[in-house]
Image 1: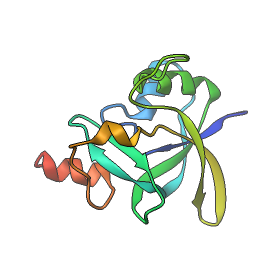
Image 2: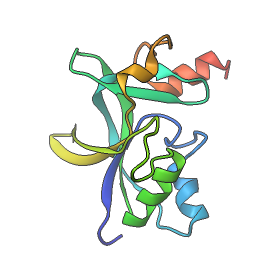
Image 3: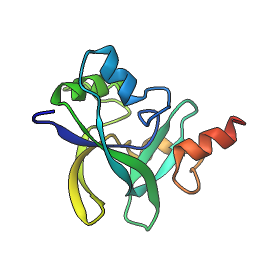
Image 4: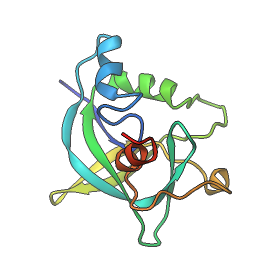
Length: 139
């Protein structure tokens, strides 16, 4: 894949989840994302029901996810999944944050939510959506 950007995914965009990036890329005829590896970002996950929301923080909490290198064209697909549209306020925003994996820092697209959006929602202990969802849903 020539060009490309990095993305950190922590919820339904992860492999095997409802919005799996591999399937999204295939549906749009785009190259498959290249997995860099499992990583963590500073922040807390919250349960929105069908998906999690990440609130970035520096309080020591960590959220588990994966770093991928993706084709530039896949960013628009991910924006659509996360309902991030230019000039419109939504639940998720697209930001770039440096995330470390095996001693290298990657400038990753991340889709966090604002802290105000999680008022009254359950914080996901351990910061791993996939493990939490499987336990919550009994599978």
